[in-house]
Length: 76
Image 1 (cartoon, one colour):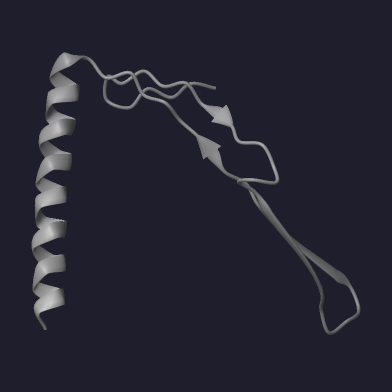
Image 2 (image 1 turned 45 degrees about the vertical axis):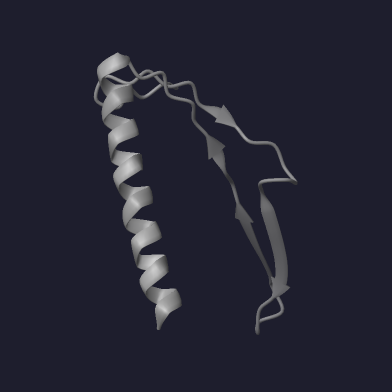
């Protein structure tokens, strides 16, 4: 299933286990078996030129703020 996100085209791919999935098994108090499975999905987007420019500006701003906060944290 492909879900467009505000004009992006995407290509979902189900990740394969065991590298991206984890599974744990444990017993509960009643003696029954409890299984937890985490599943991951990978998506690839194909932005147009305007969307790519907006993403680059947004990620650049986030990177700048991250580095500023990291520098302040290191100074403390």
